[in-house]
Image (tube, rainbow over all chains, first blue to last red; front, side, top):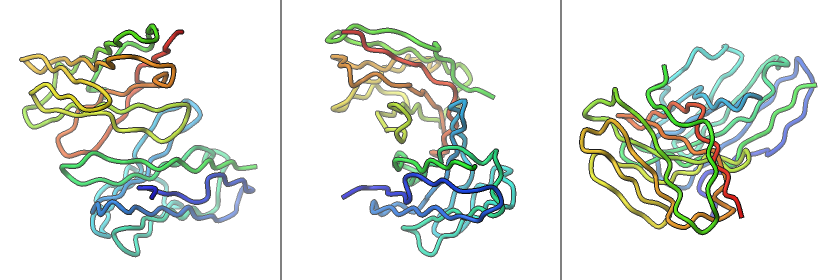
Amino acid sequence: DTAVSQTPKYLVTQMGNDKSIKCEQNLGHDTMYWYKQDSKKFLKIMFSYNNKELIINETVPNRFSPKSPDKAHLNLHINSLELGDSAVYFCASGTVDQPQHFGDGTRLSIL
Amino acid sequence: DAKTTQPPSMDCAEGRAANLPCNHSTISGNEYVYWYRQIHSQGPQYIIHGLKNNETNEMASLIITEDRKSSTLILPHATLRDTAVYYCIVSGNNRLAFGKGNQVVVIP
């Protein structure tokens, strides 16, 4: 009965590849988020979707493209992976008056 | 720009109350104070939030000063599993901007 689930938990791939991370929430929230936590442990928001519409895009390279097929899912596609993309990516969901709940993270390592 | 100020780290004794301070002197009238924690690179965990009244739940208590310029998160009986980075965040629309947080270590 996990509230926010991400897959895969670990992702190891080579530079230049394209990969996707999936996120699903069963909390009925209408807003979903993607965050990036780098090696210095800073946690920064990347995107926010509300009812399948993009509402926040924090100057993320266009190699990153979120896709929301419905309000319970927000997937993250990354094209042409670079070494600097190595990080932990967290998905979260919430509403304007409900606190955000986070997934367990996807640890992306670029070789 | 950081909207909150927390000590970078602190130690707490197991079994004792842990009082975690946070300054937010530029908080706006419609902004809430949120507390999250992150245990060893797991996903951030929501703890509590409040607007101006003190709040309590099964995890912690939140004490907000009358002028709302600072707050204190209280863990009533700290356990070793409470060792984590604690984040104090102010937000008016549930948009969270995480700072560096306070690395809290509970000592046996």
